[in-house]
Length: 195
Image (cartoon, rainbow, N blue to C red; front, side):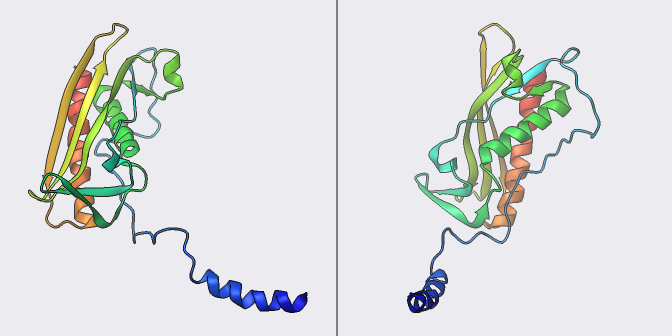
C-alpha cells in the first residue's frame, strides 16, 4: 500500500506543473480614478439634502467581461492585450457616477437597500460603449441614461458620449483615456441630475 502511494506522489507532482485553473493574469489591473473626490469626514444628511439612487448600468455582452473591447471595421471586436479591469466596468462606472454626483450636486446617493425606504431621484441606464475605436484611435464611452426626478412617473432620457484620443492601443494608454472619458461623462450626468 505504501509503495503505491510513493509511486503516485511523483506522478501527482508532475501533473500539478501541467494543470492551470485559469488564464495568467496581466501584470496589472485597470481601474477608474475619480476626478471628484468626497472629503473624508464629510457628513451627508438625507433630511436636508435631496437623495438619488444610482443603478449599475446594463451592458451589452461585449462589456460583460473585465476585458477592454476594441472595435474595428464596425463589426469586428477584439480585446486589448493585457488590459483587464479590476472589476466589471459597469460597477466601476456606477461608483464613479455616485461619487461625482455627490460632489457636484450635494445629493445623498443611496444604496439599493437604503433606497427601499425612499429612493428619491432614480438614475438608471445602459453603458453602450466602454472601449476603443480602432478606426479613430479613440477611447469611447457611451452611456444612455434614464432619470426619474421624483415620485411622478416622468422619465427623462439622454445619451452621453465622450471620446478621448489614444496614442497606442495598449493597456496603459487605453486605461488612461477611458478614465478621462468616463470622468467627462460622469460630470455631464451630474450637471444634468443637479439642474
